[in-house]
Image (cartoon, rainbow, N blue to C red; front, side, top):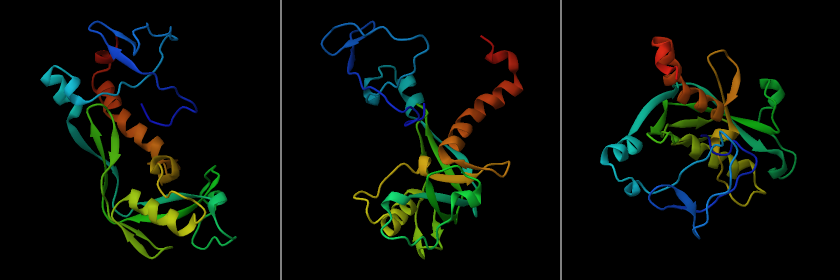
Amino acid sequence: MSKGRFEKTLRIGVRFHGTGFVLLDGRPLPKLAEDSLAELVLSPEQIVDEGARAMFTAERMVPFLEVGASVMIGVSRNMLEGSSSKGMVDPRDLRIVSKYLFVPVKLEGSLFLRIRGDQEARLSDCDCSLAAVEAPAVSLNHAFTIISETYETLRRSHSGNVFDRAYALDKDGKWRSLDDLRTAALAEPVARAARADPLRLVP
């Protein structure tokens, strides 16, 4: 489940008492709507079965973006000091509906998703070049920080979610957020299995 996909979430502390989950003070969980989604956060050592623990902690590399690909990283207009937008691209020029201006980044290597068994996906390191800033970066997250420090001078912190703030071209030539592309990449193995054996995924 992609983090940040919902506008508002609750963090409810629970503990496992052997057969199910209860609130930290022992009371039962509140009644939840059918098909409610949630994430279970725990340390790997709390998974008793070694095989299951290995499955959830194993990591695989999935191709994400090819060498030479262009990535547009969003810059908040409200964080700009003055009116200079040198090196930035208007979202209308890219046919992107967004509140951000964009700074182009070029990938100097192939970019991969590092996917753990629990479906948490992170970006691999990848050398990047930023023509607008004339500075190299060793990853997209590093490029995000450089761009934020250069342009968003009113911002106190220069970290952020690059999956939400960056866009790249999909196979149809349309700009899509990295979060959408990540979701598609995670779903692809399931879709491929369905094409190979449709009956396997029928409950």
